[in-house]
Length: 138
Ligand SMILES: [Fe+2]
Ligand SMILES: [Fe+2]
Image (tube, rainbow, N blue to C red; front, side, top):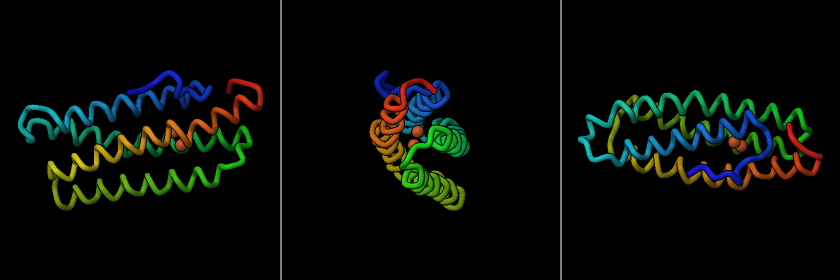
């Protein structure tokens, strides 16, 4: 699901994006797998745990890069990150409270995938454009 043209020109951020895409893909595989829900639940739970932390790290690093290069739309970008981080956190809390319901998790996995493709494919690409305008690699 990762595409080479998603690269923005920062090694750290590009590798984090690849990792995110990889994890979401395995999350979706686990969610849609043939085994019983109980058998898939381990993978679903551990991926969700991982995503919760990794998204925080990635957003922090990406915002630090934006600051470093003087990216002019940092605040707007950070607000988008905050909203998404909040959604993941809320979902994680909800499943903690109510348990892992297959349908809810499927819905959420699809949402995360769509968000990731849209965000990395559009919003994050503007950082890449800015880096290129400023004359190169970070
Ligand atoms: Fe990103
Ligand atoms: Fe971003």
